[in-house]
Length: 464
Ligand code: HEM
Image (cartoon, rainbow, N blue to C red):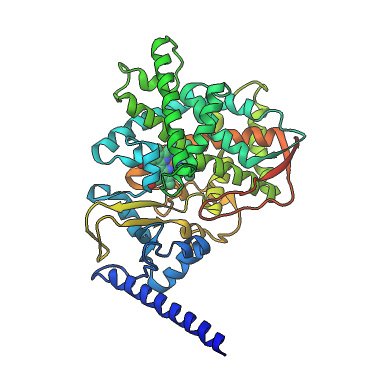
């Protein structure tokens, strides 16, 4: 009996203490004018619920508080916005003080000139420089031939092997961009760059704890190695007379380039290019392989498109711009994959000053999570939203709808959209015309907070 009383007293005290703490934390944020919502525990907020319940946490909060609510997640007081019109407003109004709100660990490791860290006229300038490197003309004349050459060799000799398609698409996304940037793909420099780059990526997604052995510290160290590699490459390029049109040469040719960047800016721009296209392109490619495997009738239609392109060519002929433009169904497969898998859940902004949005007052320094995931499953916008149906995208107008935010929107809309689609299309071209594949047993996929196969996605490949 005495033991029971003690246990009861302990539980009761813990309960009272927790309730008081939660209440105190709510009161702390009871500022007039804030949107509805809950703030959870001091410091941790509602991060555990957010990570554990994933999209269901956001859906539950929305059903209680509406499309614009407050929370405290991932170390920061946050407004979650799921309102289509407000989302557009937020993405269009960087100049009013709604700047990118990515974690400090990410900004630190990507460098102070990286595109997410710069605002205003500097952002305009860096973005202009970047857009000139990945313009449709650049893709047509210089990038696509490199991507084609790379994919041919990367996708060779996969037959009669069990491969981890997650690993292969990760290597593909990184090495393909390195080939576009500096024309290298299989040298020892490329291998060193790749292993350091993977550490850098892990670092940007970690808690900013700067202690030996942490991913954050490793990410920083990887950045240092990458900066050294790029500094050396720049030095070699300046000393050589190579006329190759790759991204590095375009950046270094000062007399022909409207955008004059310092070496530090060039290095951060190259890291930005490799980083921004890496996870999006690799994960979309992996998930396309997954969905095509699970939907043979879609694979059949896709293969028809690619075999028709191949039929007009000699085996050694590369994919060119006209071929790419003819890949209408492939484009639809890529959009449907991005939608159904929700490769990007949303984008982050933060307020640089107190401001009023939709009648609410948002304090300075708060994060705004423009959460676009649910739009992807809205049955009014996408009938039968859980069905993998690329045909719905053959109506190209769907791409220009203002609720379509797979590539972001407003002043920071993805400048690499066409490049990303061209890379994935070329990858799919060689994959489906060369191979058949069967998924191995035991693969597991996680969809939140990122789409990934924690133990790899193993497939058994044979010749087509
Ligand atoms: C399927 C592939 C891709 C998807 C789904 C995608 C998605 C996105 C999204 C949602 C944003 C908006 C971020 C924000 O508003 O904060 C964005 C921005 C960006 N993307 Fe992509 N992206 C893809 C491929 C690429 C590629 C290949 C590149 C390489 C050039 C790239 C470079 C960038 C850059 C530099 C930004 C930042 C733009 C700025 O801040 O002005 N992306 N992307």
